[in-house]
Length: 116
Length: 113
Image 1: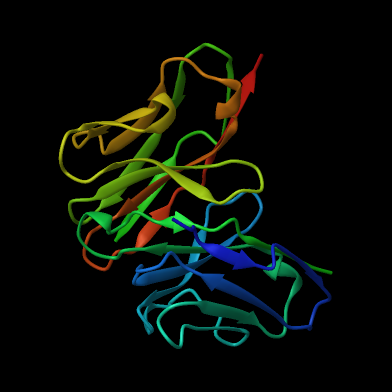
Image 2: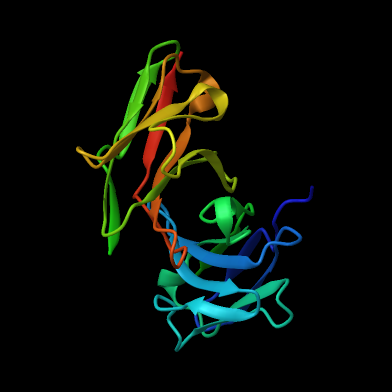
């Protein structure tokens, strides 16, 4: 079974530039998450989708971050314009989102962003 | 509301000795609890989970954790550390409704030969 795919793995940009990250979850997983992991910290949820609807985006800085999951499958996270403090690893995860699978997340390897 | 506290940011053990990673949680509802491991430059991988069945949970790679409601704890243990256990470990709490996970700050494990 293919895992969660993310791209690009690494990205270096200058502040005020824009960047986009892509995620393809495990087939059949209804729930998709984007987490931000700053060096030395635990992952922080940015946004959670259930199919193509947003369940929780309370910690998404909406003035600069946006995310979509138009067809309920893959997702894109965009940052525009980037700030120095956005340097982090952006992790995508998916889960079945129901029953015994609820809460068990499968993570991609992450996209490491460096903002100069 | 829910939260989780990992009591040690770093743990150093010698190969072949026991490992103990401490986690305390708070939750307004009956929680589900998880331990995830993250090796360098890799995504997080589920080690084990507690979802209101047996309080002693066995996971992959010889790890286990015990849910203690009276102490609001979910400590992770392994009887004998291996070099490959060097990684960062995250304790995670969620309640079934809403499926929102809250991560602890992580514990970095160093294994000395």
